[in-house]
Length: 567
Image (cartoon, rainbow, N blue to C red; front, side, top):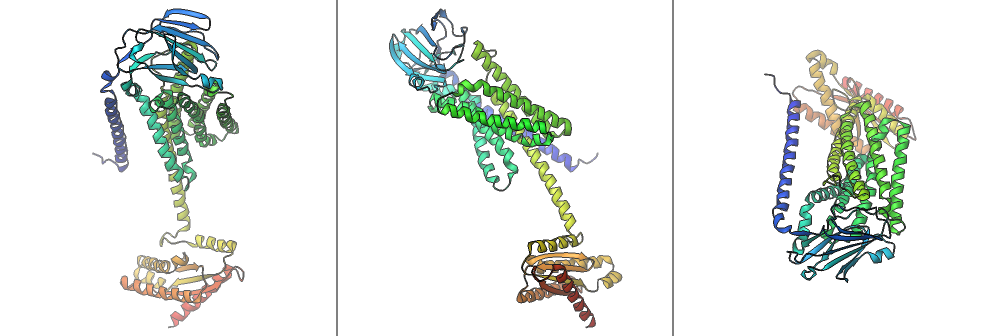
């Protein structure tokens, strides 16, 4: 049998780790789900008030209708809608609370013509948004069997065409019931928000050192926006007693801002296309999105035009972004067929399908009063998939860039490193000399070295012994001068060191250290007998060129070598 390669083992381990992580997450989710649902049967007592309503919409009246099957022409700003029904003789609940869904409307509630609750009329009078979501209204037992009247005053155009179920719950269990019924969006929204905030903080710190983390900052910002949108879309803020209009504002603002980091994330993919036309479209989309988000939020803040009015236009802009992203990734995939583009295309398609589903559901429900399926808000699930794919894409992209950078650094190092001694080579030394000329360093000293008796060693003991002698010389010269400048092998038995000082005392100290290091190396390696001739010369950019200083140092080294031979 053939042995399994190390690469195959690594791939198997990665697959095992992914499967383990997936199963662990699934197990945790199942445990959390059981914690939420174990008491649901006992806490979810409710009374649904869907049948027997008399409804008046402006001047049109409808008798004994069921809210489940009743729809009407879309309500516009200023419309008055009244619902009346006789409450059951017994709620069968203790300390009951009415959960009343509203959509961009103020509301007044009467029991037997006596006002018991009011919301939103003061905000409409000031032309402020009232929001959409659930109102929780105290509903004592003495309301049983009495006439309930609910009057809506619509505050925005194209508000709604049907009523959501009106229910009575027990007060002590209403919040836990809402959390249990919305446990999936609660988990997804909290995960997206907390994950995004943590990564935002970490990435903000990382950006101080490198801009290559900007894309993951975009991912985390997008995650925060969509996490907040998910929580508000499913009315989770009601648990924390956040006002309805504030929760609606968070929902709209997070949705309107979310495309901006996503578009910025796409910049590198657009640049890869090398197409002026596609880049122009990108700049237009980014500019329009930033302008639209800024203007819309600004107009809402001064109560001129509310976010609910511009929602359909922002939805259309989001569709334009997604369509453009799919086209970009398809072109990139066609050109390079890289794995990163396949992942991103898969994520964009998954997210687009989920958003398209929710948009169709929203439009049909809002404008036609119908629910095509009982499932809504699948965008949150699509977002989890998309952000997961974004992270994978970023990881692949970052890994590839790091590999290319490592390869580039290796090639640069190879070009400037002597293969035998692993110190700098002649090319690096010449470029360093040019740098000294360009930067005009004030004072410097050039040391030239020549290894004595290398030819005799090669001829007598072989080139392997000669290589040991060369590496030993490079070692002692680098050990002595490396901390004070640069050291390089000029070729054969010649070395050079350039220090950024011309102090006579320091030069004398360095040469003394050199001889000490040579003696220690000779004691360490048997029969090494290393001897190095040297010469040096100092100069400055103002007085003479470094080439002349180098030639003077080389001449001094030659004289030193001749003297050592004479002795």
